[in-house]
Amino acid sequence: MKKFLLIILFFASFSPSGVNADIYKYIDSDGVLHFTNVLTRTDSEMNFFVDGNPGRDRNFYTTSKFDSIIRKAASKFGVDFSLVKAVIKVESDFNPRAVSRKGATGLMQIMPFNFENFFVDNPLTL
Image 1: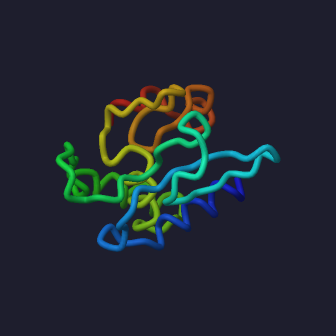
Image 2 (image 1 turned 90 degrees about the vertical axis):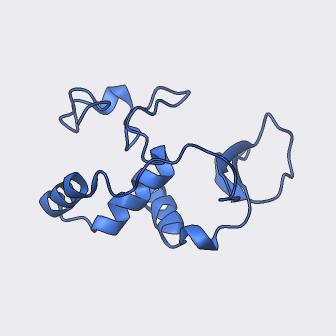
């Protein structure tokens, strides 16, 4: 949990205009997660993490569509509104139908085995 929060805080500290390079992640032989903007390992070892070129033609989802829901959840759980938005941006890029290769789903990319813990019936619906 501590590593997760550090990663979230790391990415929350950047504004979208400050990102200017693709970010890759990899886990070393000791199990330590690394982030870099330089491809220093083979493609199979490094995974694309963040698109550093905001000018690329991509399907962007609105960041304000879910503000009322985010505000309500942030208030209910005592979490900063901006932090929740940053997590959603990093996890799903505001795509409510996002499903990762590992099966994480929805805006916050919740793994199916955590649905019950977070009282989630279907993370793909609001």
